[in-house]
Length: 92
Image (tube, rainbow, N blue to C red; front, side, top):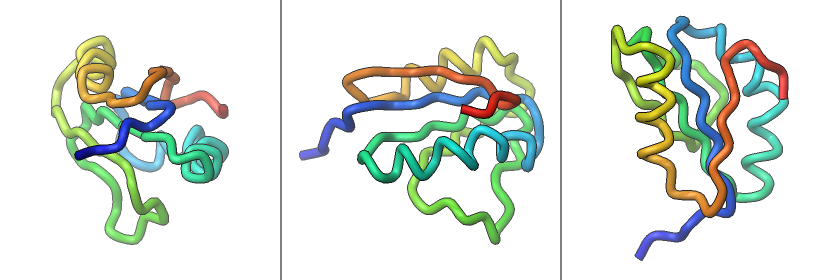
């Protein structure tokens, strides 16, 4: 049986790491502290570097997809009671 997180946050991005690092710096500690789910929908297809500091998230790779397709893909994968969407260039 899987646990439903209280919140899922979806960040679609067409940029390579570290573009998405800006929202993660402020968002990740909050999500982690409250048991929320983080989903990155990555259109670059490159993913995170091996030495990234984040431990529990869903990183979906879909090279070449538009930000709109990535957003829909992330929302479809979300399990939270509430789903929030932000962007890769926004500090939350």
